[in-house]
Length: 84
Image (cartoon, rainbow, N blue to C red):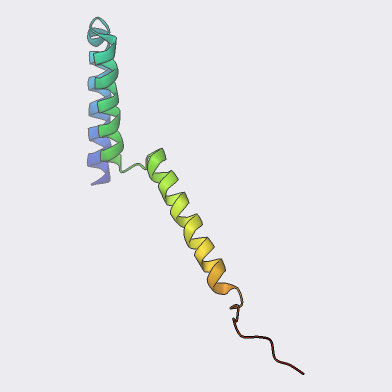
């Protein structure tokens, strides 16, 4: 299955390389949109993580670490300390 995915990536890259000169003659904005679309397709097909995905996961880990530290701290008692 991984080999099939790799073959598909190679095919998409070959298509992009062949089409680039033709697309360069057209609108640069259209080329940018199409190239970005191809890159997004490759990212999805390869199962790569985007920067946004990574940032979101880092935030979630930081939140979980914070919650864990709060749970690990000795509990604060609202009652007065014992008198000797």
